[in-house]
Image (cartoon, rainbow, N blue to C red; front, side, top):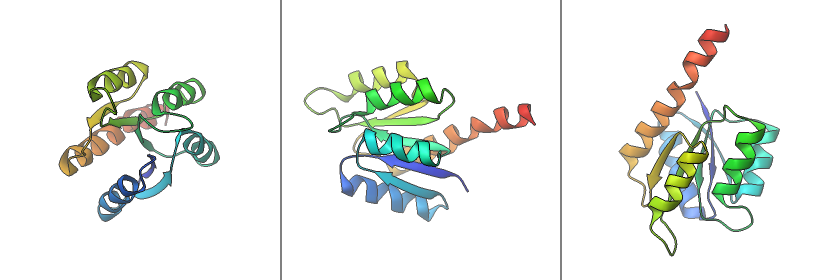
Length: 131
């Protein structure tokens, strides 16, 4: 089953997503911010990254920029509750920088599972065409 890296500074969000994704069979790794997330991805790339956008140390936007430079085919789902602003501005920026999907917090279980499934399927044609 696919390996998913969850990056969010809120431990409750990471735990909730971990349980949700492990229950349907995914392997899950967690990181509390973009710096740790990039380090974990470099050590052992995941099939998909789910990241918050507003975090201390290195936010999701900066992390997306860095990862897309180094790993152009990385699959990313970005999520945000918006902080002091509306989440749409952050999510639009993430989409423009290469996030495959975007979701607004609070996260809807079915929307997240659908986004994960669809984003992971996007990897299949690349694998088949290079085989």
